Amino acid sequence: MIGITSALWLQQAGRKVIVIDPNPPGTGASHGNAGCFNGSSVVPMSMPGMWTSVPRWMLDPLGPLSIRLAYMPTLFPWLWRFLRAGRREEVKKQAAALRALLGPTLPYLKQIARGAHIDDLICEQGHLYVYRSEKSLAGDRFGWQLRGDAGVHLDWLDQRQLQDFDPALSASYTQGVLIRENGHTPDPGGLVMRLAEYFVRQGGVLHQAKATGFRLDGGRLQSIETDNGIVQADSAVIAGGAHSNTLLKMLGDWVPLETERGYHVMISDPESQPRVPTCDASGKFVTTPMNNGLRLAGTVELAGLEFAPDWKRARALVKLGQKMLPGLPACVAEERLVFWMGHRPSLPDSLPVIDRSSRCPDIVYAFGHGHVGMTGAPMTGHLVADLILGRTPKIDIAPFRFTRF
Ligand SMILES: Cc1cc2nc3c(=O)[nH]c(=O)nc-3n(C[C@H](O)[C@H](O)[C@H](O)COP(=O)(O)OP(=O)(O)OC[C@H]3O[C@@H](n4cnc5c(N)ncnc54)[C@H](O)[C@@H]3O)c2cc1C
Picture 1 (cartoon, rainbow, N blue to C red):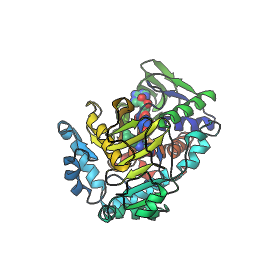
Picture 2 (picture 1 turned 45 degrees about the horizontal axis):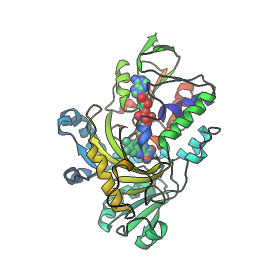
Picture 3 (picture 1 turned 180 degrees about the vertical axis):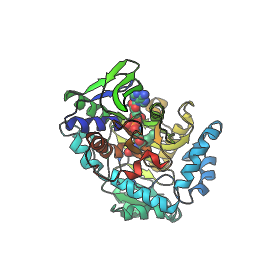
Picture 4 (picture 1 turned 60 degrees about the horizontal axis):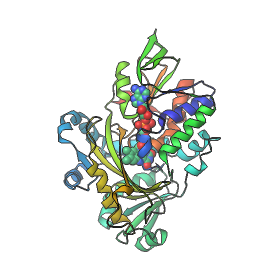
């Protein structure tokens, strides 16, 4: 999503653009996410006092977090930075930076996609967060304060109002927050594909290859090496999601990029669906009505890029969904379930990198959007184009500099 939106903004500015990717558009993390365009998601992952919840989450087999013990030594430096990023004053700065990046997602997406015929893939009906107790809502108070301070309008719903809004939800939810400004796509992978087709119709080129290096001359980019030939280019954008560090290292740069692996399960022909994407705030999972069924997405698994998926984590989402939507049957036939795992590209402070390479001003980095890459993509693409075209960036990009690490 980040690569394609960057390509579209550059194309609209009159640049001839080639997208290099060994895989078809919209098949990375951008394929299986919850599809939410949540400009309100200004709350970073690392929050003050969060570490006190970690043991409880990890001991719960349905819990939102798991860490592979074998991966712990590799992970430790990132985890340390992650915990430090959760200091109150840091979090407030991160929230302000996130709001600037995420807030304009829908108008920017529509602008970039004018002519792409994706109206059927953008729904603007809001999002719902639901809680089962005053206590769990109180635990998130700082997060709601951050959203309010960022100018997000929040509609607080009590148990009766929740049931009126969406009778499909379990009556065990006693509080909810409706955020009307948010939207979603009922087919994230399809949306990226449709944007890519539009890019090609307008003269863009998809070059199926893996980028393997850069040829520089006097500090300026001459071409990109791939496993399928050399591509001449005077500018480049590294938008390789969780895999971006490999390319950065070739340019002598590095950032503490990890992957927060996430899972989804799709239930085809669901007996029950939420009215809008609905997040169980304590369980930290989202149910989204999609074109081809009901998607239950979430969980964070810290286990790097190489370990095999742990499908128990995706299966756990089915149980959580059944608790949220009592209309789902207690037993869903196996052939109606499809499981997926994807790699969120995550930096410890929940902010992406949008910056120039230190070695070559013609190369721009755009990755690390963690939990909000679909939402952050339209503005990120614009910022990428600003950097490449030498325009003043639309928003302050200082919080996204890679040198912050
Ligand atoms: C379970 C889950 C739920 C989520 N829900 C949401 C949500 O509701 N809303 C939201 O905003 N975000 C959500 N996210 C996050 C979002 O999906 C990601 O932040 C986003 O998709 C990242 O986009 P990307 O383009 O950076 O990476 P990707 O989509 O992973 O794309 C990276 C691309 O780079 C290519 N690539 C890698 N290396 C190379 C190379 N050397 N040469 C060429 N190409 C290369 C890959 O093939 C891939 O196509 C969710 C993520 C998960 C896992």
